[in-house]
Image (cartoon, one colour):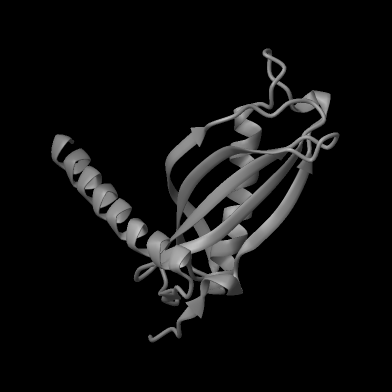
Length: 163
């Protein structure tokens, strides 16, 4: 089955927002990392499902780096876009900014890469559209995604050999 290609902009999310309240904080009075991870997984899955037109499941998460803390009252801005797709899998790049509502200052808080697999009604993997990167940044992320996939495949093979 041939699936037509789609642009990155066709499925991107630019500014999903979340207001940080006291129940979102950990014992150090910063946002609980697990909350950020859960929201990122949901936002990234929307991008994957928009791109593929199918239900998608999370296969892996690469390089989740918490760079800055978010605090009570901050506004979190979630951004996500398709980096690249292969036969049945897709890499979605995500980024979170923490905005101080009093000053408007934005801090890059988290970046990560989620890999999703598209599935059909029976739960079997199904083909996904290719990604058509248009901008220089999209082309760079497309190439970088290929290198990350090579590393993921190599690590999977190493795990298989250890078992």
